Image 1 (spheres, rainbow, N blue to C red):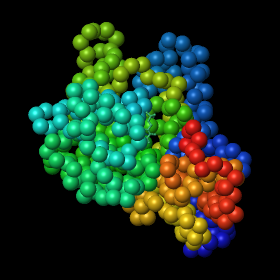
Image 2 (image 1 turned 180 degrees about the horizontal axis):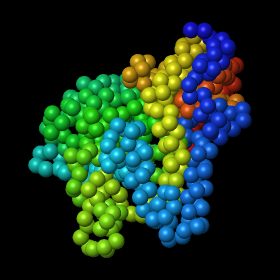
Image 3 (image 1 turned 135 degrees about the vertical axis):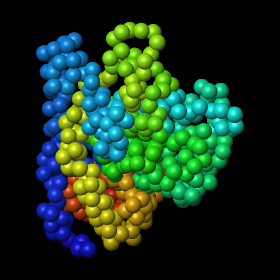
Length: 423
Ligand SMILES: *Cc1c(COP(=O)(O)O)cnc(C)c1O
């Protein structure tokens, strides 16, 4: 491996996805490596929002059924566009809600404690919102989280061994919820094996795909996963607060959702205004109320790019970018106490690199001051996400040079080693 900048330039020239960079709004002289927190705005997403505003202007109430993207069917239309990203049938996916509300909905629907089978199994490294939601769902059913909530322990504080998770699949577990990719270390959990092992023990299992959708391919239907949910503002570039998504396996179709609303209805029946719900025959049944049309609109533009580029090519470039980043760090930066804490194995690494350093908080501040946008994760983590659709190998090379100067000259010492309000 060549460590010179010319090699980065060469890799960029070979990049089959290079034209997509121009489709995004990259700020001048800023290297954006935070696409796993908030993806960049693309011109296509912007245009899609403009079109939606036009349809409101032009059609008013008739926009529900008129125009290119009638609002009444928008959640289903976007579900269809998202299905290839999770490896599901179109009718198994719906764009609705947010990660947390979808988790509430799915837990309310799939957590059915019975006899001794009362527990929910999760992990100790998941994002707090998921943990709060699961604990509150336990309480709603009259179970105390201290006794009925199991969180798998990590041996190294960053990752899990598949067998440690399987060991916790005891016969008192009713439901398992785990991340597809861990938000800090970027570890991919073996969703296929975990699903298979859960089902052998009669346990339902769902995955949070916030950090995996748009970063890695999935085969939810083939793996027989029961349900999944995700946000669309990270790797999918849907914009701040863009509408989330969920997947429900066809074998669970035809049931009433745990949290019902009029948009859970079969579309033909919805305007009959009956007081007995006829749920949609597909994943649409897990919607609750009126779709957030303006917050879903950007996805029309953004998902089109994923369909064109294809997850296979996106994943290939993403792996090349993170491999390249790790190589440069190993060659140049480990002497300054920076450690790579994400899985090295391609099959286990998601779309970002996770570095640990005791001065991480202020190293991130120094990076930002020097034009590189990382994100800090308490207490000592730095996430860097070189994104296949808009980052380059030169971005990666530059970042490592900047990071080296910051560490070598201890430039981070100008800052407080404390996180900001949003880190
Ligand atoms: C980003 C993220 C969330 C955010 O949930 P919202 O409901 O969109 O605020 C939740 N869980 C995980 C694992 C995440 O990565």
